[in-house]
Image 1 (spheres, rainbow, N blue to C red):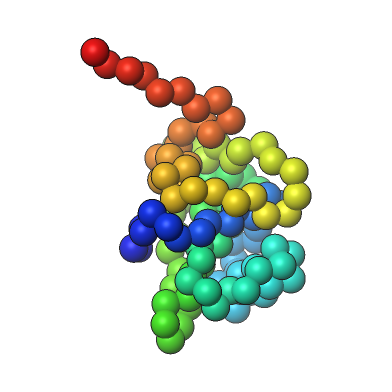
Image 2: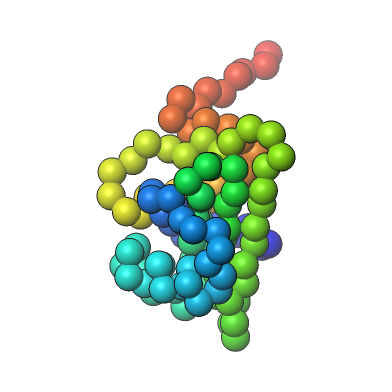
Length: 110
């Protein structure tokens, strides 16, 4: 998956049925998140058990779908209001690594 620094990322804040694929997730992006899914923006969906994530995006002539399942642990979904939480690409990277975005800390090494 290409991660450009200026790409917009939207996290769905409600649990998503991971049986959904391209069309079902695109429908969620349009209806629940109120976004245009043909822009190349990334739409992130997490299941109720918070151990699976799917990322949907449009790539010139078709949808692309990226998925990750954790064998141990859970993804740390940030606590936000609303149905779509905008994120920066580096926050998405941290989320996929299992870092809790609610209390992120930077450790400074001298």
